[in-house]
Length: 287
Image (cartoon, rainbow, N blue to C red):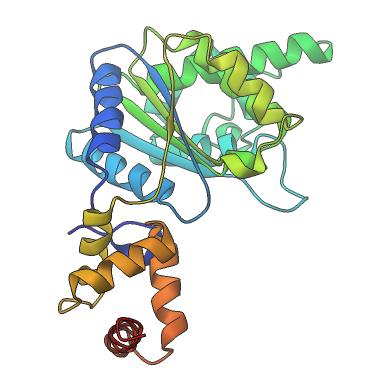
C-alpha cells in the first residue's frame, strides 16, 4: 500500500488507469511526448493517480514538476505554469540554467523574475504587440521545457485545470502541438462536472484532442473488490462481504465518499463505524 494525496492517503486498484498513464510515461521517455488529462467528479482519485505516476517516474530518473490552479480570483496569469518553471529555475545552478533556458531566458524572465537574479546580464527583449509577444512567450516556455526534459525526461502535473485562467490553457494548447518529438509528459487533472459547454477548458480540450499526443482518461468510482480493499485498509479488516457491498452501493466506490460515509456514522473511530454498519445491516435483514 502506498501513500497518495486524496481520500485519506490510500491507493488501491486502478490497474487499467495506471497502465494507461504508465504507457504514456514510457512513450515520453522514448521521445514521444504525451499529454494526458485525468477527468472525474471530485473525490474519485485524480490526484492520487498523478502521485502514483510521478513516484514511479522519479524512480525511473525523470524530473517531476507540478503546479495547481487557484480556485478564487487574484492568482497571477499563468499561475499553474509559474510554479513548475520557478521550481526548475530554483533547482538549477546558474551555468546549467543558462544552458537549459538559452535564448528563451529574456522572454520567460518577465514571467519568472528569479531568472534575472540568476542571469543578471540578460537583455530586455524588444517590445512587441500583444499577440506576437504571447507567441514568443509560448514558444520560449515550450523550448525550455523540452530542453529540461533532456536527457532524463520531464513530467509536469497541472492540477485542477477547471480553475485555470485562459492564458494558461492557451499555453497548454501550444505545448500540446509541439510536444510530439520530446521527452515531456504533461498530466492535467480537472473536474468534468464543472466544465460546462461555455467553459474555456471545453474549447481547449476540443482543440487539443486533435493532437496524436493527447489522451483523455475518465475516472469512475472504484470497483466493488477494490472498494472493499479500501475499506479494509481503512480499518475495516473484519468487515463482512455484505457490509462491503452496502458501503460500495452507498458511495459508488468514491474513495473520499467511503471515508466520509464511515466518518458520518461515527466521529470517534472507523472501527466503531464498522460496528454500527454491521448492526444496521443485521437489523435490515430481519425486517
